[in-house]
Image 1 (cartoon, rainbow, N blue to C red):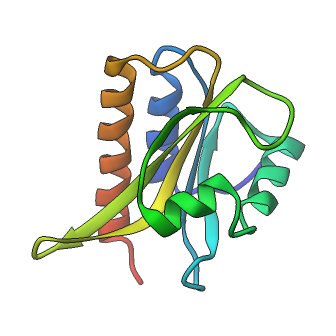
Image 2 (image 1 turned 120 degrees about the vertical axis):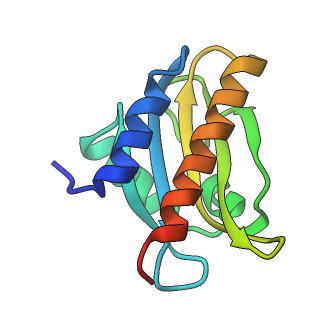
Length: 138
């Protein structure tokens, strides 16, 4: 089993409690400017999680693009086969003095399209992850 930061793991567990969400992965910016490091996951493990962790290292991957542009995307078809039918990616933002930076990505897999309540809940959970990242040692 992966060793995750318990603070992020708590967020990931709360994410999969949102109706319709099958799995969640939280990636945070690694040592390199565009590098993503898996911080926590819930509802996905083993080989599928390993493949996802490798796939996000490709700058063209939707999760890597979310880190780069800081823009959320909902209800998109996955780039790799398997698992739930849809994916959504939310930037994890942190900042101060009116400036925000994208420091990670909350990636979720789900079958039904997300309704407004689910999107709002996920946005709040991504913000919670941003508060964790804002307090993490650099």
